[in-house]
Length: 318
Image 1 (cartoon, one colour):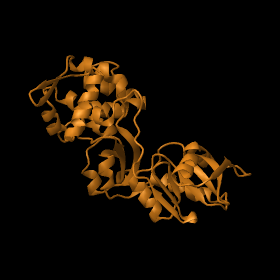
Image 2: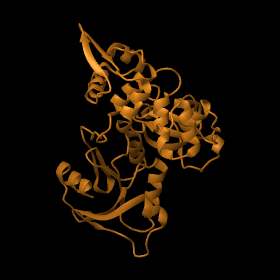
Image 3: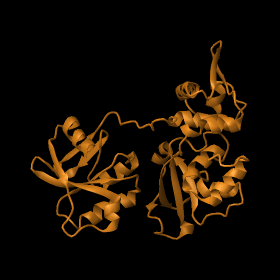
Image 4: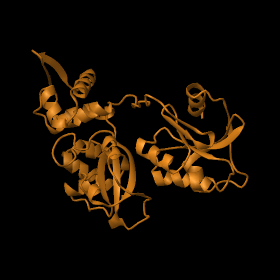
């Protein structure tokens, strides 16, 4: 709870006292697994803070809030560092209190709503930034690219993002930058297989989180991802639920109805992966093989591992 206490005290000027909380009758497994719970008191007003343990879908978050209300008469506040703008807007509209430390607090029982000017930026230590990985997968898909201008045209990244991404890739010795007049050029001194091997420890899954939604024309228009995309380019069986990908930025402009997994028929459900960068950053109408492999590598599924080996013509690359 340190981040919550620090934010409420330093950013909002509220003094808060917290202690671990559990109802006398205990909590069901779902609630015990979903969050940790603390009884907090600010200016003699008490509430229960439910700190979500991992990235969760909006229905799951609302379920925690609703179900926890059966075990306490105090207001329940959702605390999470991963609530995006769309989720926060929906919670405000439905009157669900929440705190995203250093980003936003909505505490209607305090008559308090506050937003930070600069959201916190998260980068995984020892990994490429999202823009650098986006540039890298575009370069792997298009080894003929040799200039910043060409990379910008193919990837759709901004000029500043391309410049910063190339600097980061150069720092990691994945490319070598050089100037030719006013043009920024670069080259890769390894073949694709060796380049992927050298970069493997620096790469991470592009998937920030996964949610489920009611199928619609807007969602069907998104690029296929996950097992759906792999099935298109391998012998893997097509999954029952279609998987699609959208960037965090694209998600903000996407209208859809979020559901729980299994809530409606599989044929009417879309598994929606939210990516840290644009799924089509490598150009074309399908996501690139490297990003696809990274999104699937953690599944530890022998079927998927076998098809990825075939796709890259390399054993145990992922």
